[in-house]
Image (cartoon, rainbow, N blue to C red; front, side, top):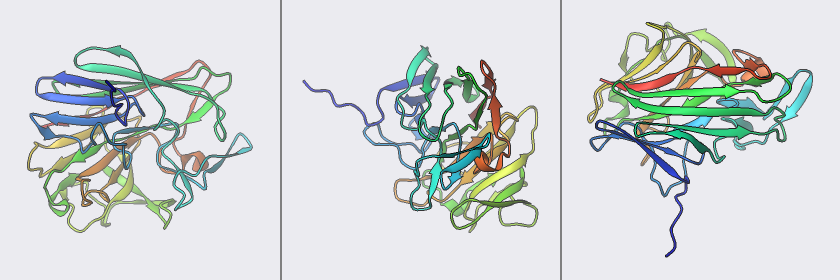
Length: 303
């Protein structure tokens, strides 16, 4: 008897109370999260390939690199253009790599991958991510280490989509604690950073999305009790959902563009350590010395 292999590889399920989360081998990301049958995340089926970055880990950079090219330490490097229509390299190098389990119990799993030097990227970096279901929801703890001989630049992000079910996008209520945002051009590359005050992307006080269309990186995030939080409310099947991050995630990208598409009923709320094109701008780009270790948590809570 032949066994069909899921498109996203091996599936690892976590359980805590009424919550069930599935983490996958391909990309080490979140494929699904349900609570008593209701979808917390807008994910994808085991037999499907991940689309639109759903639940993926974005490393060693999130978002876009202009022309796939950047200069570091005086040397120009060229990455593959993974967004050929706009001429950009997007969302890093680990999204389609196989990850392995290094620790697992009923309510948590730690998965890991090793990023090796390759064209356009010369630094070895190791990344592990622990997904843990708790009474407060899902807590995600990545750890980056540098086994190489030289300091390595990097950025890190995550791409969960909060499921909105049948709620119309315009009726969804958002609270986003960013006081500045990245302006972009036709190629969705940065043109500057401006205050949100007085703009259509100001959601600091919480309001319905209405006719706003967001594909927006927010910065200068307001931190309360050691973390910032983006609140998603007005959902038919779920209580309020909060995507939160510790201060090391200095940016959060909010993307509503897929929400109205058939089978794509969710909005992305993406914790990131740096803004788009940070390999070129250097804004909030991290550096890890040989033997160094970096970690910071983010998560999703309900209620």
